[in-house]
Every structure is written in structure tokens, then in C-alpha cells.
Image 1 (cartoon, rainbow, N blue to C red):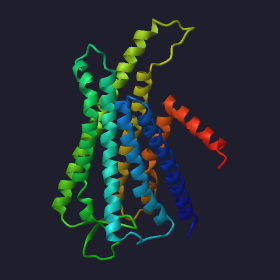
Image 2 (tube, rainbow, N blue to C red; image 1 turned 180 degrees about the vertical axis):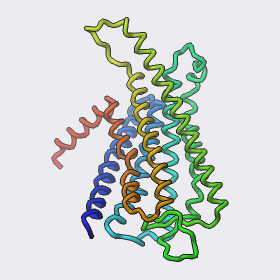
Image 3 (tube, rainbow, N blue to C red; image 1 turned 60 degrees about the vertical axis):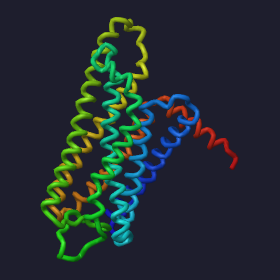
Image 4 (cartoon, one colour; image 1 turned 90 degrees about the vertical axis):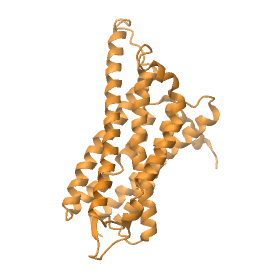
Length: 308
């Protein structure tokens, strides 16, 4: 086993263990918040789903990729490949839907009370849970092709291999079906990426207008603290920006890999970067929320003082 493979395996291991741990902490935080708080906010519901999405992505893609990097190959079989890849693609689709929902929710929340969104803002909290359930149903249905096209490693020339993951293989049985599926996925992704980009642009515009309005209300020697709504809006904009940049990177690199199948370095780079959003976003959520930082310190102090 050469140094590159060992380094890749170590990198996967660090990413997955750290990412799952931090996302697990966030799930624990939201569970604690739901149990003690009489008002579990709509944004917390959305962020809980996003955290769950990240955890599923890290587990269903990260563990097989790590085992493959360490030299394991046919350890899943056809059924294992279908199930794990189906769950991964569903979670990845949920991540884009959830991030979009979060950006739209924040855009409506931060909009002025006198705007055309005032009526929608009052009804918005009741729509969050149905929207989350709808996103699950949508992605469970739209990703169903993974159960048909994903198999274990293939050495046969009787099928056309679309993507070889070493431990699993995505095969092509019909060019027409592949085209229809590609169009559906592209429309879904572009719609949600476009919508979250527009919503985040509106949030940035609203924040800039708010900053200009309050500048003359505060003296330069007495800076004001940002309101919770403003901090939450900045957090959402950062999340959306991260997702859009990584989505663009993924789309470009995956297109290159499909047309240049004999470029192992590109495939390895793509695999390493596939976890980036699920790995980085929980740190961003913790850093931008005082409640999570306080809960982190509380849990850390409890663990250090526990004699067991």
C-alpha cells in the first residue's frame, strides 16, 4: 500500500470521525433544546434536518470510501451497494432541499413587516414541518433509480459502466432512461440552487439596507450588537454560499471524471471533497450560535468533572 493510499485513508478517517462527532453533538443539542424549550423554533427544525442529512452523508459515503481507500473492495455486495448509495443520494438531495428551505425561510423572516411577505411570514411556521416531510418524499422517489443502476464491482463488458467507485459500480442500461434521469436531477438541483441564491441575495440586500438605517442611530463610539435575526441571517448566507460553491465544484469535477475515466487523481480529489459541506457546516453552525457554544462548554465541563 503506497503513501498516497495511506494518506487518503487517514484523511477519510479524520473527516468522518470528526464530522460524525460534531454533527452528533448538534443532534444532541437540538434534542436537548426540544425537550427543555417550550418553543422549538422553525429554524431549529430545519437545522435539525440539515444536521441529520449531514450525518447520513458522512456515514453512507464516508465509511465505504474509507474502507475502499484502505484496500477493501467487494465488501458490500449488490444489496449493500444499492442501500448505502440510495441513502447517500437521498441525504444529498435532502441537503440541497433543506439548505434552500432554510434560505427562503430566513429571507421571509428578515423581510420588513410592511412588505408583501407580511402575510406569508405569519403563516410560515406552520408550513415548515410539511415542507420537511415533502422534501423527504420527493427525494425518496426521485432517487429510486439508484436502486436499479447501482451494483457491486463489475468486471463484465456486457454492461456500460457510468461510474466506478471501486467498491460499487453505477451501470447504464438505457441511454434514454439515463437522459431522462439526468434531466430530472439537473432541473431539481438548478431549481433549488437558483432559489437559494435568490433568497440569499435578498437577505444580503436587506441586511445592507438595515445596516445603513441603523448607522445614524448609533454613535461611532458606542457600537451596537447585532440582533439575533441578523446573526441568523448571516449564518444562513454563509451556509448557502458554501453550498453553492461546493455544488459548482462537484458538478464540474464529476463531469470531467465521467469523460476522463482514466484519471485516478481526479477521482480521489472528488472523493475527498465530497464530504466538505457535511464536514464544515456543523462547525459554522456552532460558531455562529451562542446557544450551541454554551451547550458545548457545558457538556465539556461535565465530561471533565465526571469521575467515571
